[in-house]
Image (tube, rainbow, N blue to C red; front, top):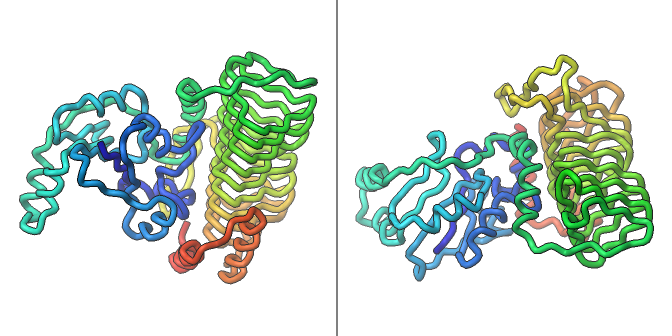
Length: 404
C-alpha cells in the first residue's frame, strides 16, 4: 500500500501557520497531523502531496515518492484527525475505487494503480477521466476534520490522550524533590534534566516529555501535555492541560491549552492561552493573550479578507512564523498575527496584523524585506539551523504577495 497525504483547497484557512509548512505538518497531540496518519500504517510507503505553488519548497523537507510495485493507493486528506477505526476501515476496504466522504468532503480515496494510470495516460481524455472519477463508489464515514487552527487547539486534549495510548511509554524514575501525580500516565524520555520542586500532575490526562528536556525548579506541568525534544522549561513555569510544545522551545510563565510548533520562545512571565504559535516566534516579557470575551460570546476572527465566527468561547492568538512581541504587549481575543510581524507598545494592536508589519496600537509600517531576512537568518543560526536558498526565496515570495 502507498499512502499519499494531500492538502485540499481549504489550506488557506490555516494561514498564517502554513506559509512554511503543509497542513500535514501542523502539530497536533504528540506529533503532527501527517505523522499521526502515517503511524496507523507502519508497513505502507507514504508521501505528501502539497499545493502546486509550494511544492518545490516542501520537497526540500519531504520529497515525493512513487512506487509502481504497490498496486493499492490511498489518498488521505491532511485535515483528518486519523483514528484507529478509520485506519482499520481503509485497510479492510476491498473495493479498488472508492471515495470516503464526511459531510460532503473527501476524507480519503482508495484506488488501484491501474485505475490511476488509465486516468492519467496519454490517451485518456479529460471528460472520460472525470466520468471515471464520478462513477467511483462513495461511502459516508464519521471522522474529525480540522477546518481552522482553532479546531486543532480545541481537539488537542483528546489528541494527546489518544497518542499516549498508542505510544511506547518510558516510565519516570524517582527523582529527589520531584513529585509525580498518577505516574502510570507519565512518560519521560532520555537524558532529561529535571530539577527539585517540579510537579508532574497527570490526574486529568497523560504527560509526555521528549528527550534532552530540561525542566527548571518549581515548574508545574499538568496533563494532558506534550513537550518535545530539547526544550527548556523555565523556573516556576505553569503549563496546563491541552498544551503541545514542539522541539527546541524555551517556555516560561503561564501556558494553557496552546500549541507551539518548534524553535519558539515564550521564556518570561505572561499568559498564553488557547493559542497556536508557529516556529521562530519570540514573545517578550509579560506578553499576554486574552482568550475569553467579557460578554462570554463566541469569538470572531479575520483571516485574510474573511471574518469568521469561530463558534469558540476560548481563543487567544494565532501567530505566524518569525513574529515577535515586545514587553508588556497585550493581544485581544482571537488575534491573528501574520508572519514576520513585530508588535510593541502599550495599546492593543488590531485583531488582524498583516505579514511584515512593524509597530504597535493602530500605527504600523511595513517591515523592510532585507532586514526581515537577515534577522531570520541570525535567529535560525543561533539554533544551528542554516537558512536555505529555498527558504529565503519563500520569504521573498511572501513579501511580494503581501497578505496574511
